[in-house]
Image 1: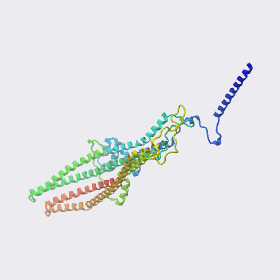
Image 2: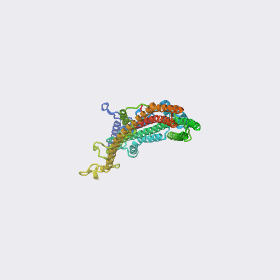
Image 3: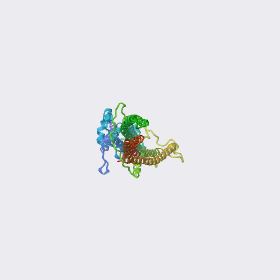
Length: 512
């Protein structure tokens, strides 16, 4: 009886041991299994299997944004030739670079005989308006760093807070598939918007440079005229004093009337008063230079070097296309138009229904529909408003359509502003060219004819007065006419330089 009981127990034990041994062997075989080579599957190292995958599209977009930012930053130190209003000579720029932050060196560079090129270079280095525009441009470049900030924060949130329950294969975060495959690329559109904003800020910077350099040029030519006028008027005052002495002598000898003495004295007094006015005007112009260069009022400036203005006049037909291409206001408006158009495209992408229902896209989510870890039901338990019969798939997209229509109208307004600005530019170029042509003709008239004739009339009247054939009043009129002719000639020379500055300002680039 005892042997009968032991046999079934022993048999059951042997079956159990055999089963455990077979399961252990089966487990080892499964763990050691490798797919054949023809299957094209290679086993990845454990570190590779545990490394999170990288969204190559997102990383590539971020890299493009960084490259765009670096490109615009480079435009500050090495700008393209077609974007500059004026580029100073490299030798002058390097020699004056220390003066950009040193008032004493700037004062040394502006001693007697400083050139127009020196003033232009110092303006680009020291003008506060230019530096303010440069800071605003650098601030606009930070938009590139903000473009992907929100998407990156959302990606980090999903990576660190949501469960990684992939089960098999490489570990991946549960990123929404809409963020990885937008239509069109939202991140790329944001980058283009930032690029257009940077382009507009860059044109604002060049606009500030243009205005500052033009102001410096006009001040230089006005100061040069005042210096010449002071010299001519001072010499004429001495001539009037000599003439007054002669008139007193003739009056005392009874050869002329007291009226001649009074007339020459009146002219001398008027001219001496004009000398005081010119001196004060010179101080005003020097103060303007100190304002442009951000210098304290105690800095003393020297006199500008004598300079002849350009007498050539470019063809008007060549100026129109150059102005449409290079004028900073037009380039800025075009950048704003491009920015607004991309903003509309971005709004349409994020607000309006897409071109596809994304039915073939599946989110990277673990299947946790059963068991204690289930987070969603195996079948729908509610009907959403967008799934009823005849209802749209995105019922709330139209709530922001008013904003989209408003943005479209703003884009149309910018496009019309661009057309108006182009028409205004053509008129401005025409007026500037007319001023330059008029200044050239008048400067040539006074230099070639009027001054020479007034000099001849002065000499003739002086000899005639000595012989008693010319009245003293005619002599005074000859002196006055000679003075006015010489002052007008100097004024026309400066006007010619100012007209060139205004023409280059209208075109948006220096004309070489």
